[in-house]
Length: 444
Image 1 (cartoon, rainbow, N blue to C red):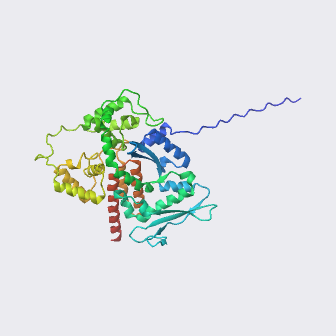
Image 2: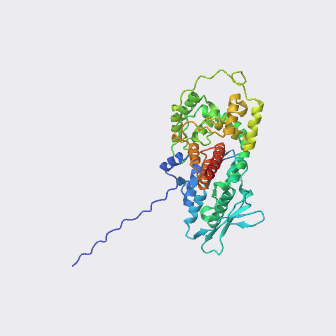
Image 3: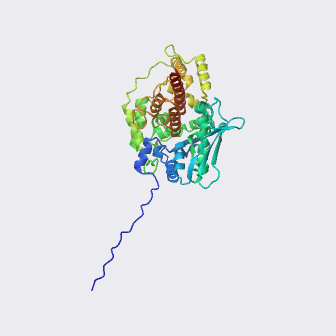
């Protein structure tokens, strides 16, 4: 009689839980990309990455950090690029391509090519979605999206290209709202950013009223346990914060309330409180400051003496005229611009506090457009900064496509916070000048 065989038990398959936040290794990668370290902001970035399927490590998504003057705190939003939108659309099974861009003139006539020098009134692009009889059109009016001031530089140089990107983003988001609702591309947000810049002076004055509390934070690091700047990311230790404070005083003669501004320059994002530094940022700052030479003893000469006369009224008037011509209106923006043109590590304390020699150097730099490269390594400890990389991209521009790619890269780095608004303006001016010279050389 045959004995019954015993059934082999199958192993129980256990579902692998989906991650709910970035891993420690991914946080380190985001640190290297200068993504803001706020824990709520990064949680928002993770959620949008899961929802849209776009990859922040491939620069399809960005975390925007903006100062809200009413709430008196930073607020966060997730932005994308036109390439990210195209990827999201191409992944949809109902996506069947799009129309060629069209532009509208002031008489209401639409054309497939824009040849005139003036800007079009509007642009439109349609997305073909399976199951719909007509394309899903995105229509963008030029005067509704062109930003004012220096942010509108490329909108004046490549008006048709810029407004067509906005129209394409509108159409893709209209076609696939489940994937992209609430996510905008950089070019859609530039006008809003320009309005925020106009309010920067007011926010700066309010921040000055909070100087006493900032002084206390930086002058004496508390013995309390520092909360991590983001989930799973090691925060700066008390010893590291104290070492940063010591090195800032020893190497740069920066004390108390000035520390926050210098540290913000080093990590290329706003730092009001040492508690928000990650451990990798703190170690990078310590390495950078330690490598710097000791400063020379302070010179006894002060502004207004025969050895160091202060800026003259005619110099100040010429500098202010150049600021007006370039659309630079904010006080902080002027200090950032002057610091960059003078080759400093950060902004000047005051344009009116420059010496005659510095004012002459600033006027010469404004006239020639020669931009000194930023000194020292960037916040990641690398020997070349994002500004340097973009500057090299400009030198490699040889046709209209590479020019547009470089402009997109400048806008993306500006939104990530790795360069300042003044940096972006200078790079755009240099890009325009290089493109004109390349065009003249090709036609010669």
